[in-house]
Image (tube, rainbow, N blue to C red; front, top):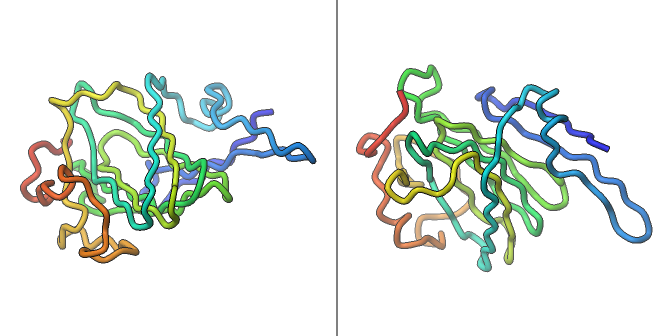
Length: 187
């Protein structure tokens, strides 16, 4: 049944993926991941871990996160309940889009996903209460390789739909450095 639509965003390495959904009186069926179909679309990755988050509050912001080699991660992110504004920031120093970002609204209603490749910091903010996000990663979580960038770094000027005082953040995300002071960036 594999029916995937793959579209490049303004930074072409970041992809928006929409999965086919077949519905009837019982509900629906969808293949949300099919390695062969994605490989045919030019996406050949081996995912090793699935993560699932629930963000109870509207305006919960997670990010901007990434891991350094050898644990750098590609991420395939989807929403199973609610909706998010997803953000990918290019942190590859040699890239012509270094320090630039792309956004996409990912939602259970749209049944879409975003592929955030290695070399990008990733984050999202919830646009509805009780939003659940599931994402696949190509390397396991490695605390010693875990890094972050301040979500509100003025140099990035990300247009988040939440104000600084209203964002619901973890203590860790409150302490993330600005891009100019980041511990590790990709070459």
